[in-house]
Image (cartoon, rainbow, N blue to C red; front, top):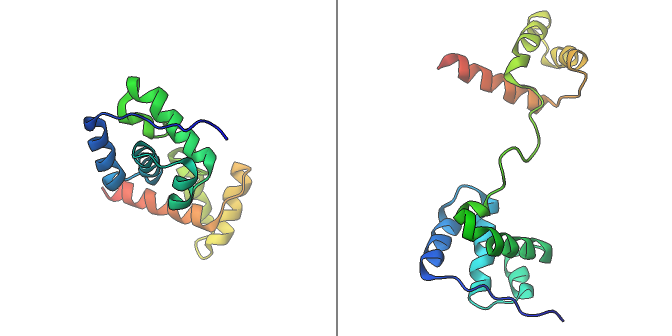
Length: 142
């Protein structure tokens, strides 16, 4: 059995963590804040794991992130760095390719999707194409 690890957090930090765990828009940051808060009141990793339904690795990573990064970064340490995650299948520069494909196949979006896939060399889902088109319509209406 490993050592019991309990973080010592000053009252200002606790107040910030509590607010962020309830009100932040990022679910991952909220979960990390909850992990740190539960650890600070003395719960073990197993108890945190059962109450939040996450893995022990998630708990250890959140505690490490807070313990080592909080002094230099503050609560920004609870967020992922920018640029992490899946890159978009279609970007604004692809608008001309999409426009030509839709002009060629006005009646069927699935056929336009095939043309776009041939030009781009990647597969697209219907959802990706629809959400790209919606975002382009919103941008042009502004």
